[in-house]
Length: 372
Image (cartoon, rainbow, N blue to C red; front, side, top):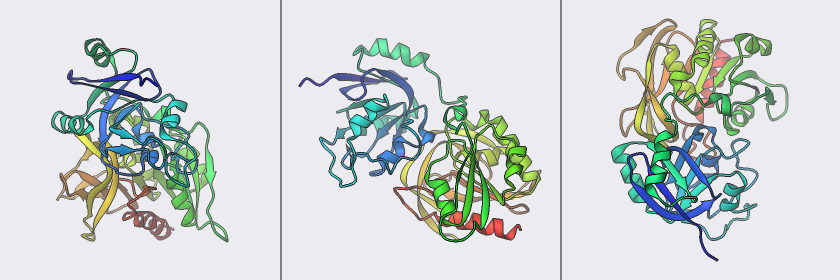
């Protein structure tokens, strides 16, 4: 059997030739690398990766296949997938199929057999950039022209593409009635988030990103959750305005990832694009209130521009940076001191782990209880 060849070309002209992996065809997106050694199914189905071509730094991907239980959303969202050495066959009692077939089913174009270490080092040195993958042309110059015509991540509004079209409810689990009602604004939510809230006695009403404060009031929630999601937070004007209205009405707020950036912009802070972002499940973050260091899961290319060691007055009270990345001092969390609101830039709901940050859901429940 002859393997179909494929070509990867970066925005700056560097190219790699390898083998087609997944669907054949052509795709374009932002090239980013993920340092996770496991949990690739969670990565692929995380809506925050919409618009991105993911490079896996772990060399051997696909060992555990795919299954119907570990999807974090309704589909695979990555624009393309790059691996060094795909597994020949899955080896897991939970596997319902193989990774390559799943990529084909979702029409995800990928490439394998390239030097992903060299590609990762290039992205670390030069920064995340546009990229194209093709099994239709092996001419680097031809593909490079198309890459330069593709959209950039900065300035991209991708929320409407990933949010739910209709509200739905994830009911509290366990015996008895729900302790709390939560309105969760879906900016690209992962399935594990309402599940973890439900385990803590919350009826979770997942609402489209286009929801208004009236939609929230119809639920009479004890708190409002703003989810993770893709794109440039500078384009999320409606979400920022909704956040400001929620803060004005002093409803408890918890935001994750994109939700952290939305809170930051609602408080008057700016956001900026990181050189190559944080993506993986091994990022050290410090909770500055306790001094505790957590190993955490990340997927963000933008960050909040807030002073690390200064309490800032905002329209909603005093705000401070609550969490910081120990690798590069990037802001990883915000907290209001005079209102019931906090957020983190990372993913405490990480299904594949680590689970160091799951306490944040308990903190949200405590905030809702104290606000009653």
